[in-house]
Length: 314
Image (cartoon, rainbow, N blue to C red):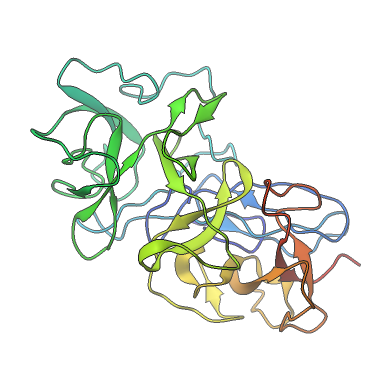
């Protein structure tokens, strides 16, 4: 799936090559805007006549039921945001916000169609002697089976797409209106049609300071921040075409091709560099400038220096 907004294709909650949902934000002036589309991919649109868009959040999708999961929204969603179900509608199975399963079970996201994208929830048995948040774990059957060895209110998140070993990640606390995360230095990321609620590590996309080779990519919820997402190992370079947010090499976002004349306009996305608004302009494209991400005045606290290389609005 791919999102259309900024030429970024990334997260929501992140699965892997194809990663996840994006959020779209319109801004005026020469700034970039992140966009999320119903199919869960994130892209960044080219400069518009009335607004400039920035790259969307990373989308993550699983390669197969036995490979890494797909965190993108399921096909047919049309809300264009990270939360793909209205807040007043109940989740399909159980509710991971309130953990309403019987004793000895936990509410887990899974792929009810047997695919590689989480789009439903179910009550699953809590494993004997379950692993705690931050501890090694194992997904059972596939990443999207809804079964693992983690404790209640957490799930096994992939460390590597080659096997089913990972690390237990906490679910978000609170509610869709007021999400929160108990683990320090994490932020609540909601994706997969609202069934995937993960407290993922925050990071700096300029420093690319994620552990284990993960990529630091835009977060759609809340917009303006950044989270660590598994690397799809595509390692596409500057101006290369891309389809998912984690297709590009570290330090690049998959955004819409309109942000650079060097990008192929017929492709869904294009890999462009993150830049520092407080540093001299080092953008590689003709006429490119460092544009605020995700838009002027819309950065999350502490990330006001982060920009994306793109063509300014005429």
